[in-house]
Length: 281
Image 1 (cartoon, rainbow, N blue to C red):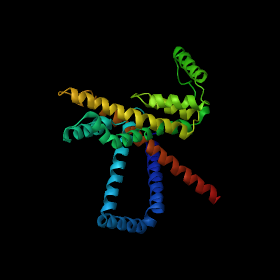
Image 2 (cartoon, one colour):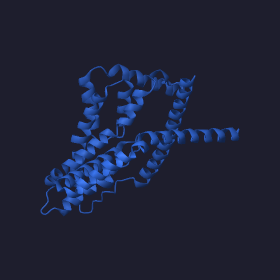
Image 3 (tube, rainbow, N blue to C red):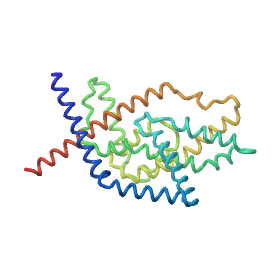
Image 4 (cartoon, rainbow, N blue to C red):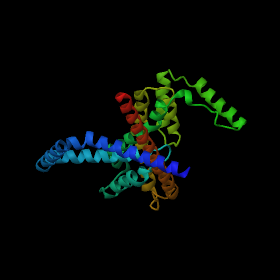
């Protein structure tokens, strides 16, 4: 029994390695000279041209804050709190470094960064949406719940959602998503799952999410944090941060993400092998 499990795992590792090797050879190794030439030419132009240098710095800064925004919501409720650890300290340091600072002027000065971070947090909500959208709806049942009372309660909630929410009314969907995205809540992943499950279009989900998180929630959050900072000299931005619990959740999420990636690579490798065998026949 144990030997069979070990042999299966070894085969999966071989499948994964061969699949990744084929992807590397096909997309990277065969065009590596082209990539090196493009990168070298670009860096030479950046070094010689001041305008291109500043443009490159702006792009890197934008991608940096966009990535931090994505990290804040990328997991199913286990995102890394980059607002607490990066965005809010940046705003506070900007306030402290400005001569004769005011709260609103500081927010206006940091507004591009705040919006970019908020847009990134909206993009981080896509995995639950895509997960539910691509899942086979016919396989979703509540039969795994053994307790009859809990099963009836769950079915009642499911039926109420289907009755009360009109998923064909675009105005209702837009307003509902916008309101949910405009205030900090841990249940927005459920909104993404519902939208994916009921086949809401990507644009219909993403546009109100970006508007709510990028242009409403993030600026308001930043304004509130700066207000508390300017009105309380003993305010500590990490005082309300459950750091140890957050680290535990993120370690769990990273492990879960690694398992999912491994399963995905193995499945893709097997599909490719089966496809090659079918073509050979």
